[in-house]
Image (cartoon, rainbow, N blue to C red; front, side):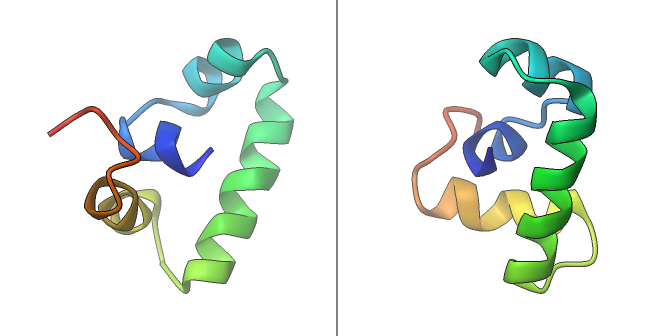
Length: 57
């Protein structure tokens, strides 16, 4: 999920990519934000890119 955040996908697009519901994606994103202590998904995407999880520059 963190890699999908790094790609900048919406909840609906991320869910479609890995075949889960949008509500499940929202739960996962919320948990990621909490664990990374990030206030939004844009800030959480940076560690994903830094770790090479994202293919998007």
